[in-house]
Image 1: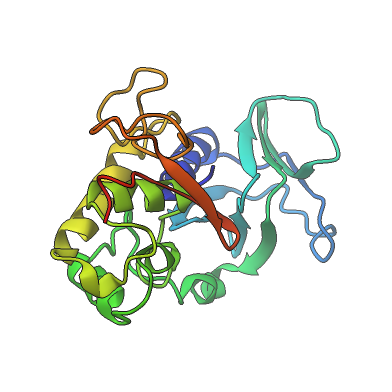
Image 2: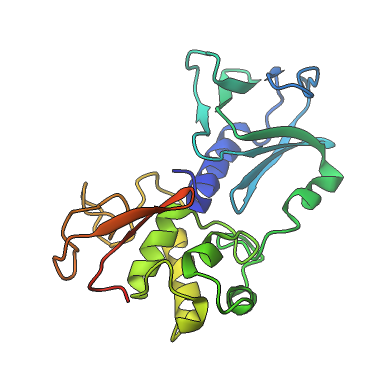
Length: 249
């Protein structure tokens, strides 16, 4: 599931493949931008901001958001109906697949797209004090709702949300006001994403062996790694929640 670490890693991979190269093909397959052709222009840089990704090319910026199913792939893979964009620079091909958002912006105005975001957990603007203040702004808000709000801090998705709730020993439905140490939660959020920013196999437990990487996410009915109590799950709105009824209160 794409979260801030996945987007950061994707941006790093695209940057390594495209930065400094001149496009020999630009094929955009979404309404409103299908006539845009940046062929012949140089890729200046690729950056991420929370879950948003920007490919900066001359005066333009290609903005994408992976949403739930999207991905960028490097290599000459078969092109099918899911392909939203193809960028080539000689032998290098980058394809955007099932992208939830894809648009071409004036590079000078790209900041407007992400102006609503809180501090980026993996960005140069990371500020734990601002993130903590944002988290505490609505004390009665359920913890999971606050963590998933990108205006609080940018980059947390449902996997990290569930894992963080477990790490601090609180149910996803717990009011933010019940946190005894909100600074610790913010610090753990940063540490989790930072440690995963350059790997595809996400790990929050510190044990990278297959099947051992996560505390609670996707493990409904399985024993808690701490107390062996069977884990619970339910769907809170559009998001599924996982928790340990013994370790989380």
